[in-house]
Length: 256
Image 1 (cartoon, rainbow, N blue to C red):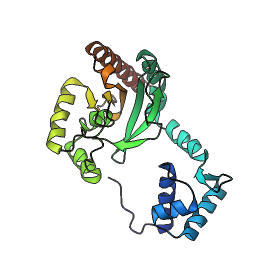
Image 2 (cartoon, helix red, strand yellow):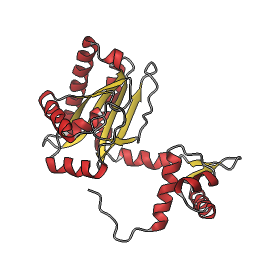
Image 3 (tube, one colour):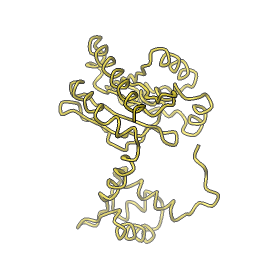
């Protein structure tokens, strides 16, 4: 669980509010951001000016601010330091090529949330609001449930107590007992399914990635339209490819 700061620095909290608003695509004018985070325009302007000086935001001719590519640079460096990413990267791309243009995502858990570490979207796949670095609740996704199913009861309780079980769609599981029942099925089959729980019209096949000691490193998923992925032949083929890919990743990870 995250440790709460004894005396959090308010300036950093305000900066985080601004950066988070910009990352959500919030209209980046000083006035709009001030309204969004409920701070005076003068304060927000000072923060944006400082962030611009440091290279974390840019300002266009209309006076609108947005996050700069320096954020991508820092994120890219952090991701390269995650050994699972480097090991899995070639296999994620091979799976994407084999899966007829579906969305393939390598995810990890950080601070009780899923983080999309590597997202490969085929040219023929349906546009999906998922990019590298996307954070999402674990219980509302196939890959999150796959990881949770292999966590200790204490860790699961810690995560769910902290983040809750918000409904992303009408199909999202929001009952802990129901979620526990699904964990049992995941442990038996090795597979986790998201049946329109994250986004209506889309389904996901997922499985956890573990090291040789059985510690969960992350998870891999294939996502596509319900009408296509739930055809029996397609489901059987994709789940087989998914499990085979994860097996290769786990072997390569252990052989480092």
